[in-house]
Amino acid sequence: MSKLCRRSFLAAVSLAFVAGQAAGQSGAPSGDAAPDAAARTAAALHPELTPQVMYRLLVGDVALQRGELVVAARAYYEVARETGSAALAQRGTEIALATRQRAIALEAARQWAELDPDAERPRQLVIALSAGNPNRAFEALAGGSATKAEVERALAAAAASPDALAAAFLELNRLFAHETDKAAVFRTVGELAEPYPALAEAHFAVALAGYATGLSDLGIVAGARHAVDRALTLKPGWERAVLLKAEILGTESPDVAIAYLQTYLQANPASRPAAGALAQLYVGQKRYAEARAVFEKLWEVDRSNRDVQFGLAALAMQAKDWAAAEALFDDLKRADYGETGVVQSYLAQIAEETGRFQLAYERYLAVPDSERGWIAKLRAAAMLGKLQRVDEARRFLADLPAVTQDQRVQVRQAEAQLLRDAGDAAAALAVLDKALAEHPDDPDLLYDSAMVAEKLDRLDVAEARLARLIELKPDNAQALNSLGYTLVDRTPRIAEGFALIERAHKLAPRDPFILDSMGWALYRLGRLDAAEDYLRRAMAERPDAEIAAHLGEVLWTKGDRERAREVWQSQLRATPDSTLLLDTMRRFVPVPAPR
Image 1: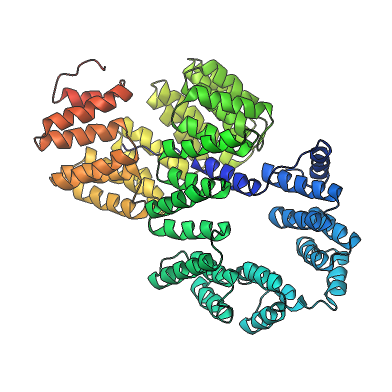
Image 2: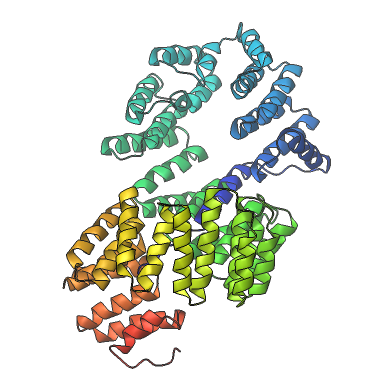
């Protein structure tokens, strides 16, 4: 039965790069006092700050010490906007007031009032500071519901200052964030920008509004591309517009976006945000070696950039370069980098992947209490199972403080998996049956119990539970695929199973296991060329023993026995203990020992 894909590590890489891009836009400040000041600010005002936010706070404190008061006030306002911290907005307001920066004080006070609606002080300050401010019309609209006419008047008022007008257009899309009709917003922003054809920021606003639509309409795609190109003509090399253009191009063709950023970086090799965007595109295309090369260049330039180090470590894991990944994560652990438990979890996973199950057990136990800590405890039990200490693992799971229903279900799932790994599928099904009695119609329990029932040849149970899951969740692609594959592979009801797999494929067209099911169903229907096409696509997405077994069988049946042997032998070297692959090969050829 086709397997579920593990959740990709790419989200972690992407989050690391978002932080890295922002932090990389300015040089790091020097001096010993500033980091301590930033740390004190962080501890006092916000209990859970990312490295990006810490860096912004550091900029603010350094600026304050150097007397760069505009920079300091702006830094705190921006951090407040990013984090949603009313305390940081208050601090930005107070700094701006103390240094008589009316405009920034107004912005910060408005942010403070939005974040702490029960506080009277920021509302009073907004009223007082708005009096006599020539740009108050535009500022009064931010965060609220604005009509087109109101925004036109506000932009006209801001036009007295080129800098104010540019800033207004950069904020323009935020005024319409509450609107659900993004295509209408795109048209409105385009109309608002028409009176300002020589302003790069106006064209940028149009392009951003187009991108926000999802770019499913070809007319909007063309409009967004024209607008961002116009912005770059008026402001050549503008990094913010370059990144937006890459995003727009990437929705049509990631390869075109990659080529664009490569060209930009040849002319601007020091652009960390562009390098970060390029690395993310590489990752999205599974070009991990090239993404890693980008990270390595960034790492060579600045060994103090922990965000880059984290991305490099994650990519080393993807390449199964366990030694390099472990060294990088060990260093990040010593530096106390990242959110609670992230680095420790990666280190535990590396120990598991390299077969050091006792060390993995200890590392999973050491992950601090948190959502990650809970998952780590479940993995710790799995490590006991790999150490052949199944009874101890079951007692460990029984003693876990499972408070929520989700946690109780996860404990039962973990126990059943222990028993499955130990070869006792019947006991695993009994555990899941008991859990279902406690939590009827739980989707995860229905799915897991169906998988175990299928392994025990209890196809009636498997079909009934998958059918119930589909009844509860008609768009569950994995359930559709699993039931469809079971019907195709284990029963004469091939056409019925194929219809279910087709539904799954429409919901998840790139899922390698659904592609595998499509290929196998087409093979069973006698459509060999189409079967080969789907199975090759599945192997390209995820090399896997089961997919290789299917692809080789299709090739053999088509008479291409040499290529069939190549597919089988290649995957056998990677997974020499795959029962399915070995059994498939034995049906056609003697199986030599893996080389």
